[in-house]
Length: 607
Image (cartoon, rainbow, N blue to C red):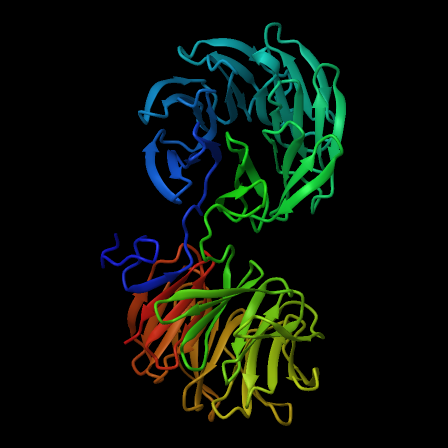
């Protein structure tokens, strides 16, 4: 519970001063290894020096148990699910009672950079692999007595990544960072190198089939399956975005296997035909970990978006359907009547939320890829998004139906605003231009250039006749929109200008930049009035509805409120686990919304 005692819709504590959280951070954090519990209803996760237990049915963390004072690098469960082998980077290996949540034993390998460890099929022995020395060692899991040491003569020539037991636990396989022959197969009794095979650059993941006869490998350019008795390649699985297969797993049905891709997708393959049977996208980035549930119906995965999720092998749908963005929130805005909030994200969606009860209404898929800018028409019936692919797209707010696609910009569209009665839209992009679009004609009627580098932000004047722009050149520019003429230029920032805004009366303006400053300008006299020092890269800045407060959002995750008249800081709103990228203030001045790189939005009270 937070200091204020407030919780969000899911019962998670809210930061001090926050009214609600839109989205959730559940099961989204930094971790190293994952595994299913024996019943398939819980997941075990290593994070930092702790073992976390997640209830997958409820999506709740059931426990967090300290294991080591060093980062944990390996987690492997005994076949009966009662014991786990956990290794830390400093060389410590722990046998852990999964039912009693305690250490059963611990031994030290004497290695300083363990990178991989696993249990033998019978659970009585353990393999460890050290990155610095490339030493592969086998241990008695109960006593910590070393049984086997296999070390290369020239470890500096052998960059190792992971190890697994071979068939019946009699052999060991090591995955290397080599351009040729990247898997080494050793006989543990003699220490003999049996074979080097699987010639591809970098082994990311590998696992043994249920019968122990086949090895599935994910490498830099593909996934491959090998029969270990004669080292025959049985299948090659390609077509991943960027080619790499960062994670692999066998399905419980012997006819299928899974690969995780750099684009956040999981592919279910017919292994004998090397054909994709199903593909789905549980992540926004590299799928780095995958485990199949004991009943074979689910896959637990972890990705570069730091999200732990469980999806159905049959449908690709998640077990838990939380309303959330799955990547950074880039833009936020209110509808003119204040009844709804819209958020745009790098997850290629726009989400609509009701302010009455702060409930999710719908998600709109954005064909233009990442949504970096949002605007709502004066009537609230339409919304416009500026996207990564250089387009400006207009949607119907009520249904999410695509109405217009405006193309012409080169590079990301960073800012969009409606003008007048909503028949025109102004956009700014990485190509250094601001374009005025006539929606009825579906084309740009004016292009304004002048910034050296991208246009990162725009703001219309209260009367709609002028507009401010800020860019990578550190300049604030004011434009006459009817004539398309530059009225004035102000330069004070050391670095990119990320946000601009007019005061409610239109006489002043603020600009915010990567130099950590929010600067207020007298537009009539063209001079700087005052500066507010956020202390970190400023992503967005706004005037309050009455013009008495200046709000700034920073890369430090904080939102600061300033007394405009005195320049004194009034409040510091903290609670995001990533940079605060976007701000929006309700038309009645009651609410402030901050959108963050942590994928959530926080609602704060201003009055």
